Length: 230
Image 1: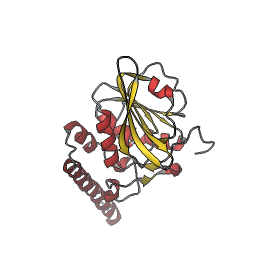
Image 2 (image 1 turned 90 degrees about the vertical axis):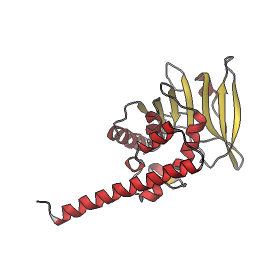
Image 3 (image 1 turned 120 degrees about the vertical axis):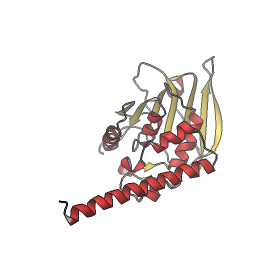
Image 4 (image 1 turned 60 degrees about the vertical axis):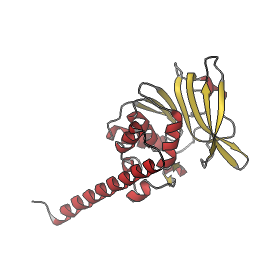
């Protein structure tokens, strides 16, 4: 027979799950109201509970349009902004994606649910460990989270169909767009003084990657190098 304390724990857990399910359902409806109706994208978000990657917040906050603090002084980009980024990337099953800045691992998981294979770099050891655990817990195997400076030249044997940089840069390293396959898309945030702009690159058949401005961005400046601690 379950004791009163155990019963309370079960009820609390069920209530939290129900609350996150409700918040997620509202988030999906909000995306639809904003014109984001791609079934694959919506299904990907529905299949990855954000609370498994970012703990300690009320369910309503998990799906609100604000960034949330995570370990190592970093922030998790809000899911509405992530949905916008994913639309720009035009993901489809079978593509290879390079992600710079794993963070919580939530975006990696959503991209994996879209059928792509993700190689994700994170400079903080504690963040990459947490992301690995969360990804395993979600049963996601198409993500390779790696500890390393993603802004340095990655020692990888192949190019990528898509590249996403989860932070702002004053200058985007040329080796990132060099690793982009023909017809590939790269997405990053360029800092110019006090302004940050979302920028997209498309590589054509000649190997030239033309940039396109996709509007203002609120991403924080990304730091290079590996920290001595954390």
